[in-house]
Length: 295
Image (cartoon, rainbow, N blue to C red):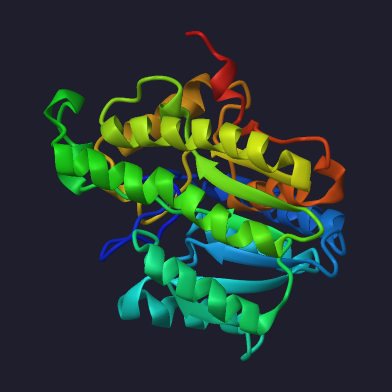
């Protein structure tokens, strides 16, 4: 449905679907190799906490891979036993002892317990990735005006408030400053049919990013969003009309495409690195230029 995943009894990921077309495969592989070589060592010595990996197509996983390649040591969360095996299999590629702990982001108690376990692994955190969102499927199919009170509450709690709750817990561990990164989508800014309450929740997420950036700036903690174009994720499949959305990007974006997961990873490394030390409270669009178009 939207960005990332991991919520209470239900998970979601970014709205993203990047279509893979055979004639672009070679170019994509070259881009991935180039992105990896450019970022190696950029995050050496840094410790990152990743929320939102559900499977190998998750945007959170693309960014986690890029952070790890850039030298960061990572700690992961997972949502319930159903997703544990998926996350365990993926994180094992970083080594059998890669830390991962359960955490339902709709529970303050579980968030607190999660970071107590993180403190058992490290006394410092430098990076936090929030790639978490959820709305009931029916809320992404009909009209926005039909959104129920419970669907509205749930979407905002899991997709937006969780950023505030996670940042509050991690901030004391960012003793040398840090970078908090959240995933958003263009539906926060403009109407995207059927994105409905998730667009409103993403607007709340983006506003929360700005207020957090203001609060935490004196502590040298930066807070930014990446607004990804459509990418093929499990969550994206839950959005009615998603295929048509992809078609719009291919027809109207200046680059005639959306984005690739590796490009989101490279942007994630940049925003986590010292190269972005003066950037905070911003939404960075990685969408083939679609956001600039008026028609």
